[in-house]
Amino acid sequence: MEAPQAADIRNKIIGILAKRARLEAGKTQRECAEILGCSPSTFSQYERGKKGLALPEIEALACFLDVPLQSLLDGEYARAQQEEEEPLPLGQIMQIRQRILAVKFRKCREDTGLTQREMATLLGTSAYMISQYESGRRQIPLAELEIAAEQCGRTLDDFIDEESLPLGRAQRERRMVTRLEELSPDVRDFVLKPTNNLYLRIALLLSAMKADSLRQIAETLLDITY
Image 1 (cartoon, rainbow, N blue to C red):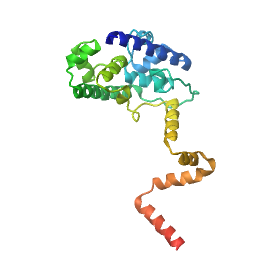
Image 2 (image 1 turned 135 degrees about the vertical axis):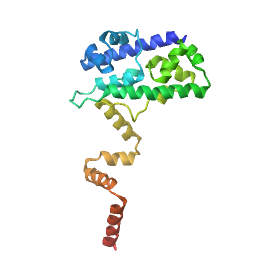
Image 3 (image 1 turned 90 degrees about the horizontal axis):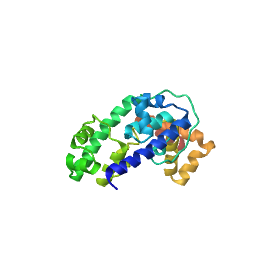
Image 4 (image 1 turned 180 degrees about the vertical axis):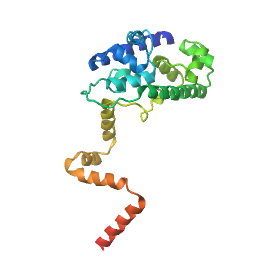
């Protein structure tokens, strides 16, 4: 399948997922458009797959709609209960993410030994547009980013920075569950056992103490023991 056709299909899929998440969250196209800094008509084009959303825009949308990022990428879906929270500066976050992605996109191309013109040919666009992506002046549509990643032997995960993503509550809960699952079974059981709450609080306090204070506590314990 040619890159432009693949991008068109991907844009339509993302548009469907974005629309479903928006309707489930009870948000209007205008509200979503305001978050992304575009017009309602442009957001409508995103939902219909006529235009492609960029990764920073999808990240901001996931945060605003309080759904996991993956629900807008591959349809894995989970709604969270609504809760009032302080709004994040999503506009600033998108700008920072756009600049970070521009650098990563350029490095991906250069590491593969491709020129801007060759990358443009692979994506079905112009060398000028590639230069715009790499300078951070234009957002890279997700569909094109995925195709570029594949051509460079990378995956979309290589462009997603888990630690810098704007997180809604659903995403935070998902991350906490993932981190719990990464713990060894005995440690996980200890953490989840309510009666161990006091020990965990003590561990938190100790982790915040300076080395000198910890040394004094250790010496005191030794004196008591002996």
